[in-house]
Length: 247
Ligand code: G
Ligand code: G
Ligand code: NA
Ligand code: MN
Image (cartoon, rainbow, N blue to C red; front, side):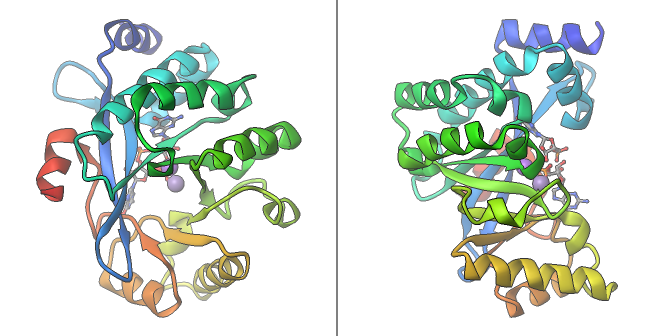
């Protein structure tokens, strides 16, 4: 099977494999949320990553149906997770830009009985900017119901600080490429500090991505970053493995 056929097959069979990675509250050390990261099982023990799958799913339009399956799978899983832990789902630009994305998302959520404030959606700056005024309306509709919104890979996309001011956003996820430079690159350190202080002044929370070392963690805490995610805390793992971490 080629990739497209494989995607069709998992949609048809509703055989959705999702890994979860914890996002840690840096003040308490506790798990704040779990990011859902889609995977495709290749049959023979190998797992295909989203960077290979999502582009094909987008080109073929299968991303919409796949996204719905992923969301429903995450919502189902969230019932097994302690209520104080949120679930974070990635939404690609094609999903966001589909007419009625907001309505469809809210319908899935209503059918699940999961409180909307346990759900975070992650979007890139570029996806939001694709058609910014429509997307602001959609995001407002979601936020009004309590859904939280994070900007993924912040600092790498086509962003406008002008829009950031009016976007209905809760979290900025500081891109892994900047976190990587902590302790090594003055410019990266300055960018991380600047994002944190700008976020604070806008009443947004920051999540550092790709935290791998004690040194990075210390820098982030000293500079007031709110949350961290990365191999230092835990890699993305399948459902049963993440349940072991939570219990
Ligand atoms: O799982 P991995 O760490 O390789 O994820 C890489 C990227 O793939 C994520 O940052 C995210 O942007 C994207 N991604 C992962 N899971 C999903 C998903 O369920 N839906 C969409 N649209 N993108 C995803
Ligand atoms: O695109 P998004 O940032 O949402 O996806 C996160 C991606 O980053 C996933 O593919 C995940 O496997 C990867 N990732 C998560 N934590 C780390 C980390 O600490 N180091 C590195 N190198 N990659 C990470
Ligand atoms: Na993400
Ligand atoms: Mn990211």
